[in-house]
Image (cartoon, rainbow, N blue to C red):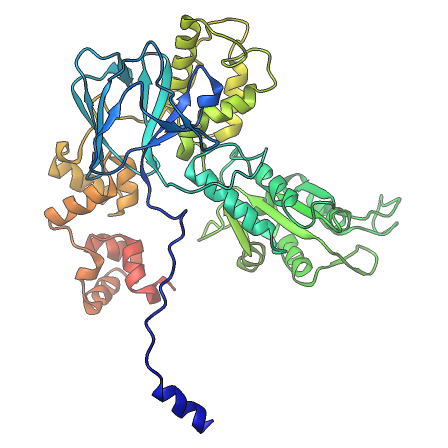
Length: 497
């Protein structure tokens, strides 16, 4: 042992091993995406605007289609050869219009001269080009997609591409998986793909809606029951767990399970054994995938912490439709694929193209509280028996709050309005970016300019005094210090207890 230690002491120190950067983890860049086009092959095509370099915006602008091939969506007789130029810098894209070029509408008004768009992650600016095609402009991470065929997962938004990667990674393991996301985002589709890409694909995929299970029958429905185990048990029941043997059990709406049932589920997952009602314990060989739209963290959590951690060996969050408005065209194409009429069922005349263009402008200006499920319901209400469909009737109260026709810049908002909004958002930059059309970088710069402190500006003693003055309430102490609660807890995690 001594000789080995001595030999190590005599070795020269080697340079630190560098960690390679993954090619798909690039920072988001401004991206134009085709949301609507008369030709379905152009849907989802993208063009990245590189920093500090003017991009000629016109017919010859080169995009990349969903298959990774070059294409030219703007090559249209109604669109000018030179619409203008696009430049990117300081979290803004500047569109400089050429005089006399064909029209571009933004929020119902024609753009002229120079227009500046603040770029906020998750927010898309929608451009209507000559009533011929609809483009989205926003930040999108340049994530390489493996183009794996997943019929249940439609879209090219970076959030969706990242989710497809997560599905492939999780499917390659034997871990249980928890899928989360609001209603209508497509959690069941994710479960289908997890099973299809897993080693258990040859086995059954058994789905059960936990919210629909009667409380008094839940145990027997899940774990099985012997004949005569309870009143009305006229025959033996195998239960969902044993029916899924060799395959996957998908438990939807797991958050609606009672606390007592959650305790029994936890034991079954840990031991891979189920207690048959009125019978003996049986071993089960299966994988469990669960889904919930309810909160999984904090005071409003619907899952017991132990069950959450057991299920979330692999955790997949499904993005909302509002986070991927650039995918609406591809989702619509998927919906209309088996219909005989629709925007891509045949050649449309110019008026038909313009009508469908207006439909997609409306679809991209709606908040979609019901997500993809609601989108498909709205598409189903469009009258396909006419060549000129009407814009769908979307509730005004649910429309996205959009900026005026000329996008509001950080400098256009007064200091008083900015400070009031910052306080109302509890000094959280992410919330403020959703309230005001300002990027997070602009928010940080304005805060510093106005002398709003950062959590790191305070000493541990000052933080402790603020907590003491507010009875240990971290949120109240953070507001008094004019910092966000999250920033305070990042520096002093001991106060999260």
